[in-house]
Amino acid sequence: MQSFGELYIVTDYMDTDLHDVIRLNSKISRQHKQYFMYQLMRGLKYTHSAGVIHRDIKPQNLLVNDKCELRICDFGLATVKNERINATYDLTPYVVTRWFRAPELLLKYQTKNYTSKIDMWSAGCVLAELYLKKVLFGEKDMAKQVQRFVALLGPLPQHLMDQIKDQSVRNFLNDCVKKTKRVSFEELFPGIEKDALDLLRRLLCYDPAERISAEEALEHPFFKELHLKEPEGVQARIDYFDFEFEQYTLDRKILRELIMDEILLYHSKEARDYYEKCKAKYPKGVLEILYQRVGAAPTASLPPTTTSNNSSACKQAQSAQRMDESMEDVDTAPGTVNSSAASEKKQQEAAQHAKNVVA
Image (cartoon, rainbow, N blue to C red):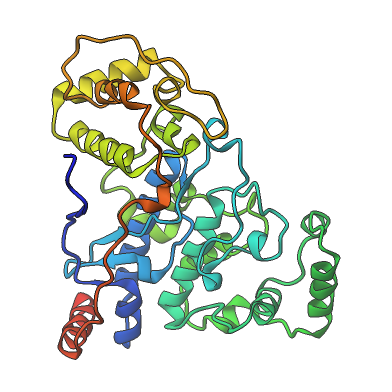
């Protein structure tokens, strides 16, 4: 374990992503749109129930195989919405690819205390793209994107305008209302089904409090044929114990150990059982006993345990004996290896996969 320097994550093979499916297929049936969006909503319901916000939902991050099964990928910008975990820092507004970024982030009326509803706005943009065959708010600069907001949704409600501290943003919005020509959902989406249009309206609204949740969306008539077939799962909320590591500066060596501990939890019942016992005994986490917080004095080590050293918490306890070793910066951890550009042949194969998905 001390020598490994690379980490490989093996996942199920997916033929393409939803971006290529939309781009390379001239017509996508209603059934395909329903099934893609239904799976997205199920995934978001599960993710949000755990207290996780994905923060980068877009067609490129929705993988699809030849059975039309969809999976959400790229959780690199994801965060946990939990006061005990991230109470010491503000959530950054610089998340989500701009074309899919919710108005509360772009217009700065809810930038540090936003919720999982930002993912629901992005999901609305995905649904719109399935019908339009192009990005709904795909403008080159942010000003024009905001103008598109105003054209489709009208002026920002006053109670949200009052939350914008930047006067220049408020002035720009007022000018947009005067100069921008309105366009209705019906004009922008000619021929769209009534239930799809209603779902779109409930996803694309300024106020996150009024925006539909993933759980509510699954109850929407648009998914009537799919919703009753099997129950949609939920996950227990992630607690502080599992994210305690974010409070510390960890070097490469400790990160390596924690990764191995995490892997053991999925392959060793003994490790899993001991993890559950530690979680119950130390709800505030065990790293606080083992590691030094940034700017804090070293703390005492955990009491000795007789439990097998194949478990996560036990390995962490043993690490307390090695705290005299120097700490490296987290940035020294092994990075990902840059891969070369795909060959023209592979690009052609990928395009064919995307066409075959809805064939």
